[in-house]
Image 1 (cartoon, rainbow, N blue to C red):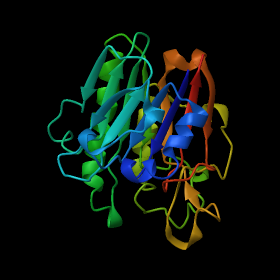
Image 2: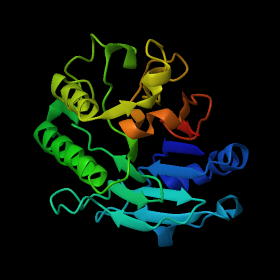
Image 3: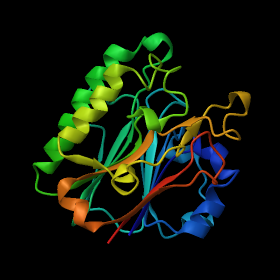
Image 4: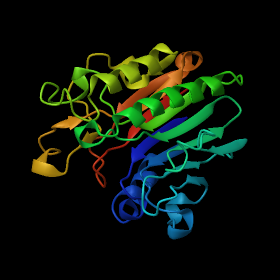
Length: 253
């Protein structure tokens, strides 16, 4: 089973670029998109999406945030949000339940310039961690994926010293991701590539950052401990353009 997660920074924009060809060439079983910036009725899906079940969670605010999952298997149940009013207006979480696991697609809030949204971000991290554990308590292991908006370790960004107090690399956000792993989840890319450097999934549009590979690894697949025996591979695909992020992948046996 091949799973793909990609922050497309606008699905309508990415559909006009590389997304259809990417689906044709990679044929994912599950495609999880973040920052879709559209409601489903605003999007005309091309033929490459034939055979997929489409599920969406759009933000209340038009053109903002949003996530979607396209699945070849029909899920047992689909849930929008975490069931928490204070966190569910921005269209950031979508959960699909299958026979053998629960899949959570997430677009984590950014702490923003000067960390002005950091207090809310910390509340979010606690709520999201609790939500994942509540899903596990229902009896099935969990896969979460998406743009987590944090580079966990210094090797996860090109310039850690310069960004020590920047959004996405604050001590608080990094500790929040550590707490998520300590709660029983595995960062699948680091499971296979514990020491790999210069492996990034997001680059600023400024200053030719992508061409120089001055990037950040902020897109993840995480899994419950019970799924570790099924892990076959995890990868980042920086050669795929069309967004300021690139896709990340997970293969399960």
